[in-house]
Image 1: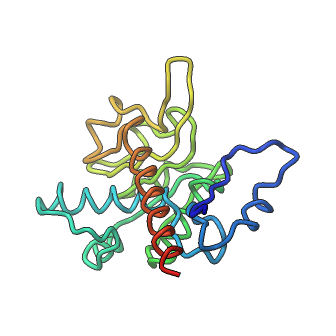
Image 2: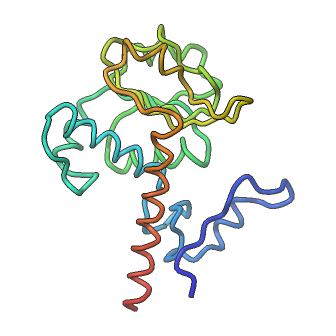
Image 3: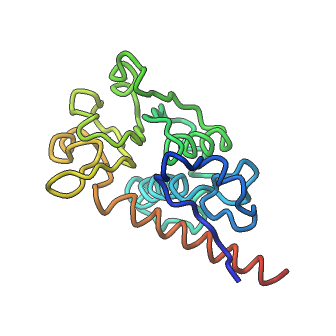
Length: 204
């Protein structure tokens, strides 16, 4: 009677998230974390949706198609210099996997990268999935860059994204706010996966 299963992280240290994820039935893996999952990870879907939204509605000024992976959008995406910051299992890794699947070239930075600014300042699109406040500052981005903020950090005053919106706002052409940017789209993508899973399992 259950159509979708997610492993809520973080787990206690005594439990392996990877081992537990492998025990989830593929047809119910709505988080898309299993190697052969039929579902795109919601966080990656949310990133693709937001970028597709920016391309069609903001840049072209036309109605966005229902398909977040439309050929026209993917062709545009492939012409851009892209940096993905972060390689965590929950965000960086699944986003990277989807970009590779769509054959979109990108540079991935992490905590071991000596100077990420070397790459970010030349980028058209920066996808930040770090989860540290102000990991991106205004001097790290070029004029007209697009920033997609996935990272989220709980602070004493609420939640903080990977960049200060007021600081990068004058240089960035478009950016997602935190909170209220990727998070609700991520939830919507997860629910869409659950509905799809329920339909497929009911049909069988």
